Image (cartoon, rainbow, N blue to C red; front, top):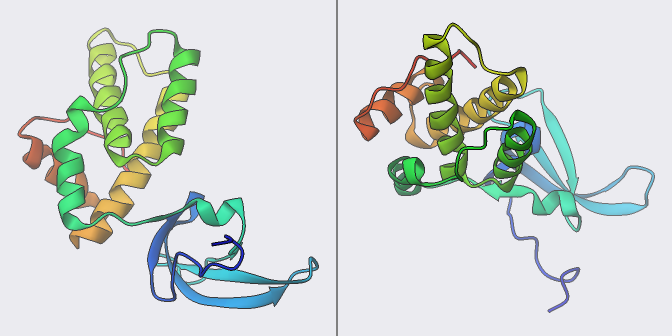
Length: 181
């Protein structure tokens, strides 16, 4: 079937992850005119900020970046598998930043959680030598934390600040104290 004539893969009421907007609810799928003719758009509203609205053309690459939320069982599986996900450690900070950015962009939550685990362990190692993470690592860590905390809190029905202790308990390992995000 032609993709343009196919039904949109998401429906009104679905919650999705969308780029930097985080978790959004699809409030409407409607034809709108934004200067490029009459195009059908997803109307997304952030679940954490009602005033934040995004309009995404249904038949666009942007719509393909809308990801369904994980289920509770999938979140638990991600937590359990995260220590074994990701890639090997990359010493060169520029190459690491590039590789970790690609992992984050992939949307694979186990890889994203692996980045958190890996960078927090690296931060602890550096702290013992009175050194700090590179700013690129800090930015990647903050992005990964925001993504994981927001989705896991929403899916598990807990506060965002409870996510890291929840992961800590589930993994049965101590995570170094993480910065608030």
